[in-house]
Picture 1 (cartoon, one colour):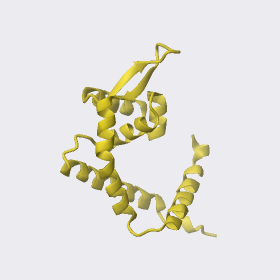
Picture 2 (cartoon, rainbow, N blue to C red):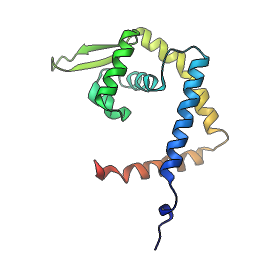
Picture 3 (spheres, rainbow, N blue to C red):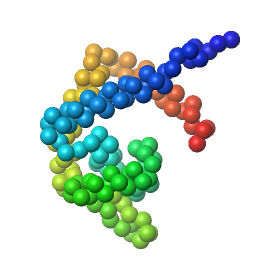
Amino acid sequence: MTHPSDQRAYFFKIDTTIKRIRNALQKRFNEAGVDLTVDQWVVIDHLYRNPGISQNVLAEMTTKDAPTVTRIIDLLCKKGLTERRMADTDRRKFLIFLTEQGNRKYHGVLPLVIEIRRRGWGNLSEDDYQHFVRIMDSIYNNFNNDE
């Protein structure tokens, strides 16, 4: 007996949708003169919501590998948007924070992000959103045993 997903490459649909959203967001950043990549924004967004997290936790939260996160943080530090501080409990561990300039950048860029999110969501309802989250969470959790 065939399963409905056997012939439907739902992962391809997810991937192409994500790429389209990322491209639209990067284009909007470029048009607005925002000196950030989408990946840099994702890191800034996570740091704003979780100040003082470690690079490893940040890598997990953003689903990026540690070298990529290190490279992004290095670039954001050079731009004056983030800083590394030694952890009080472990001097080998650094915690990452947004600087005051990083906080201003977050608040300046957030309206552009919201604009793109709204454009993508269009006329979909709150019910649509709840179904979407439920389905995406279900797919995500079906792969939890693979790690």
